[in-house]
Image 1 (tube, helix red, strand yellow):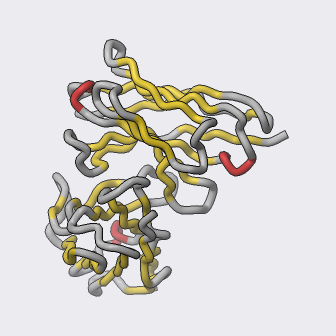
Image 2 (cartoon, each protein chain N blue to C red; image 1 turned 60 degrees about the vertical axis):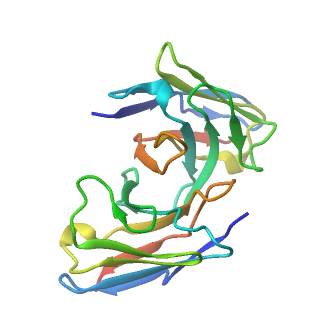
Image 3 (tube, rainbow over the protein chains, first blue to last red; image 1 turned 180 degrees about the horizontal axis):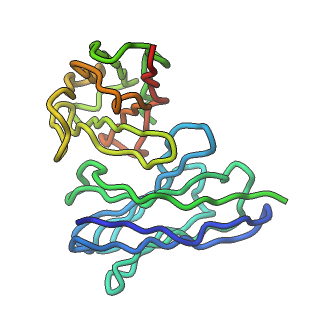
Length: 119
Length: 107
C-alpha cells in the first residue's frame, strides 16, 4: 500500500524558513517523480514543485521560484521542501504527491501538513 | 500557463441524479487531463486520468470524456458519498495547473 506521510508544518513568522518532509513507503521510491501541491484555507489546489525520480530535474511554480527548494533522499525514501522567505500567502496545507512513473498522472496524495505564516 | 476553467462552480442535485461537470482548457492539453474528488478535511483522490481512464477502485458510475480543450466528468447516479468538490488538472505542460473546482452539493 502506497503511503505518504508529511511532517514539518508549523507556525512561522513572515520572512522565516521551514523544511517539510515526506516519508514514502509501499513503492519503489526512486522510480517515481514526486511533487508538492498546496491548498490555502478554503481555496483550490496549487501545484508548487516537482522532482524527477533520480533527482535529475526540478520544476517550480513562479510563485515559489527562488524561495523554495525541492529535494529527495532516495536512500531514505524521503522527499523534502525547503521553504525560505516565507510570506503570508504561503499559508496552506502542503500535500506530498506522487506522480506515475515517466511523469504520469498524480496518483497518490499524503494527508497534508499545515504551514501558517503569521506574526 | 494553461488555465483550466471549471463549470458550474456549484451543482445542486439530489441523490440518484446525473451530474455533468465541465473543464475547459485555454489551449490543448491533448488527453493529459485528470479529475480528483476532495471531501472536507481530506486529501484529494484520483478518479480519472488521461481524460477517460478510471483509477483503481473507482466505481463505474464515474466516467470522463473529451480531448484537446473540452472535458467532461459524468457521475451517472449520485450516491450520498459523491457530494464533494471535484477538480480537473492538466499535465500537458509546465506548470501543472488545476481548475478552480466544482462543488457538488445536495439539493
